[in-house]
Image 1 (cartoon, rainbow, N blue to C red):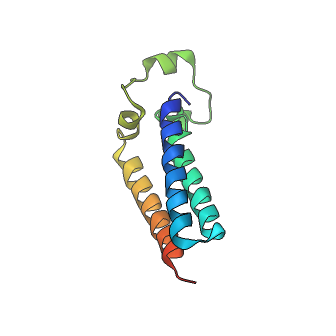
Image 2: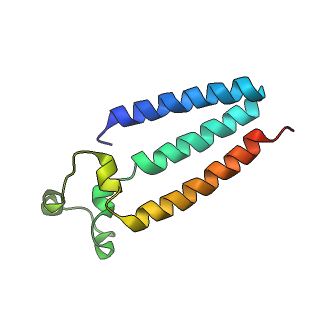
Length: 111
């Protein structure tokens, strides 16, 4: 992963959210679920090698060559590389939206 600052910032925000969930619900189980969902969400966005997946899908079974890596466009931030594919943004929005909805439904339940 090229940008460790984004990972550190995301994990700090996740820790803050876990503390808020713990203080408001007094439930270690809900804090653990928040931690697991948060780490999976962060990993889903920050860990994939986008240079690998930004190639034509027929090349995915093969390693990225030095020539391919040199020819791939490099943007200033990882977010700009992520946002270059509208289908990827739509898929992530749907998956993450549903996951956040289910997480909120679980955390806000009184039982």
